[in-house]
Length: 246
Image (cartoon, rainbow, N blue to C red):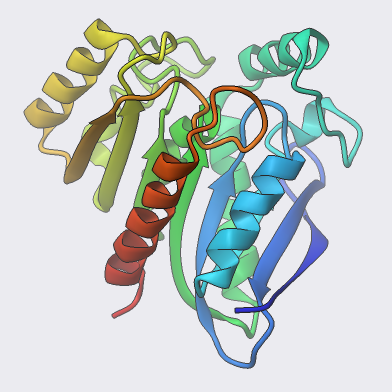
C-alpha cells in the first residue's frame, strides 16, 4: 500500500508529546500499532520501519519516547553523544510516565476515523520493553517485542514492585518476544530468567531466539541483518492480523 504520514501532538501529564503517524493512503479503517523507538527517538531507520508496517495495512503511531526531556522533534545520533544522552534519558524517566504516554496514544487513536479501535504495540530495544510494558494496559491486545532491554535487569526507574518483570502476570494480551543470541544487552542468563518467570506467571507469550546481535532490525550500521528483518516484519504482520483483526 502507498502510505502517508504526519506529525501530531498529544497531551500527557508530563507535557505535550509529539508523535509521527503513518497509515495507508486509502479509504478505510485499520488497526493501530504503537511503535516504540530506541533511545534515539524517531530516527530515519525507525521511520522506515513504521512506514513498512503502515504499508502492510496498519496505522502506526511512533511517539517521542523522551518528549519531556528534550525539545520537540529531537532525534539523537547513532554515536557516542547520542547514546550517552539517550541512556541518560532512559534512566531519568519513570516507567509510570511511559504508561501515561501509552494511554494518551490510545485516547488519540480511539478518536481517529481511520482506526478500527484495535490497538497493539511493537518496539525495538528499550522500545521492545515499552511495547511489553504497554501490554499492561487492557486496551492493548498484543505486543511484538524485539530484543527488549532492561526487563530482566529491572534498571528503569519505577515505583516499588511496579517494574515490568514483576507485573508480567498482569498482562492479559498476547506477547511475542524475539531475542538475539549474540545480544550483550540481554545475555543468556537474562533470557533464562525471563523465560522461567513468564512460565511461572502464566504469560500468554511466544518466544524466539535468533542468531543476531543487538539492533539487527536497524537498517543503518554493521549489525543490520536484512534477511532477519524481513522475517520479523512478516511475523509481526501475521501476529497483528490475527490478534487485532477479528
